[in-house]
Image 1 (cartoon, rainbow, N blue to C red):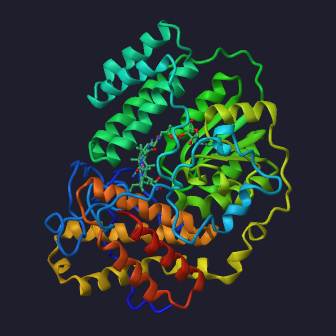
Image 2: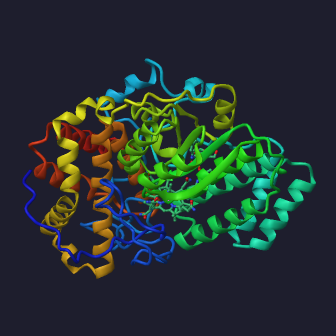
Image 3: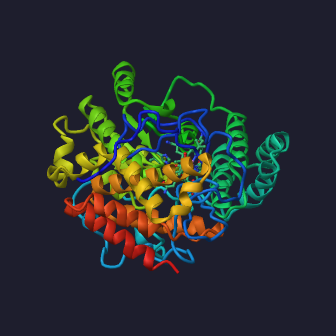
Length: 475
Ligand code: B12
């Protein structure tokens, strides 16, 4: 490792393109840091460019690499490859987990591959689960209009009307509210919705879920399930959809919401004794933390069903990390729990056994150097692109955040030893940038700088080369 500069202790908070509660990167290697109330909060601002796109493009603007409304780096012309794969990277070592041995349920036929392959982009908007082509479709369209207009009253009225018209609560939840929430992400990615719009939409959807009728308390349940998000994971709504679905189906659910620290989760399950822990994560950068939580719950004798976009559209990372089950969406999860509940786990499950590649220490060392790497790449880019020195403070912060995301995904890819996690993120990023009219030219130089810093690490270097190659294929 040749990182040449130390990050200052007072380095600026990383702005959140999705201003929301944040994550402690120190506590969670690979995570994105967005403390509540930092510069990112309320950035909103919608479409725009304020990041690093050295060498021109949209007036020196950038887009945020990772979900921001502003630019960072990217690929020329943008547009991800149709298959999302890096040339030569094939399915990587994680490909094997798809086919062999016991492991989590790999879901419905659709998810097992009978549908045409979609780009592999863990963490990116999922493959349209719960999308409705049925009677709920027109209700979802109407709800979307209300949500888009930030009209909470209209949204709640629509939910009530849909129920009166005969839709059951689960259908409203998963075929009306769920797709609207997914569309929020699509619209943001296409630069048609600002961060503030997204926040308003999520809040309305949350409120709509609360307005649904509760199942009557009968005293009889199918069993008890704890639904929790991984530590550092703020995407609570997907977990909430699952929690409400299970409740409607007759389970006793303890819904713990976002960002549940592992020790607290374990303390909770010791106290409540659930049959299963349903662990939700949307961000692949949380996978190392998810692994620790899975192992800890199993150590407490409780099986873990994993789910959410972070685990990959085919659940490959759930299996890789030793989860006892996986399901692609809330309905499949409910079916799985009812018909094939995960067995009591082996108590001797050790995380090291799941990931023998970690023995090379690359993950540990690169994760530990996360902040130095961000800093070194930032300075390296400044040297290569002197125009960056003229950046406003906000642009500098956002650029640093973008680099932070690149390093975060690199670290996560090292953890699971899957180049697809990294290449999928980069090509997705290129798409986001393109939607904002930002030439993503500075992504390859950022990867080059990282490679210079990390040339002593063969696995990491290979990932970076795969990333570069994947970007070249974006046209
Ligand atoms: C709303 C939102 C937020 C909100 C979340 C608020 C909340 N209360 O949930 C806030 C503002 C906090 C947020 C923050 C961030 N976000 Co955000 N967010 C979204 C958005 C628009 C919607 C998420 C959602 O609710 N989806 C809808 C549901 C239906 O999703 P779902 O996954 O299909 O859920 C089903 C299944 O996954 C499954 N399931 C879920 N959990 C479980 C668990 C188990 C056990 C099982 C079996 C199944 C299961 O069942 C669900 C129902 O069927 C998505 C875009 C999108 N389209 O998803 C981005 C998105 C997930 N966010 C993204 C990013 C980058 C971020 C930030 C890093 C931005 C930043 N720079 O700060 C932060 C990270 C914060 C953190 N550490 O968690 C990216 C992730 C990209 C990637 N490749 O990883 C996305 C994809 C947006 C994008 N840029 O395209 N975000």
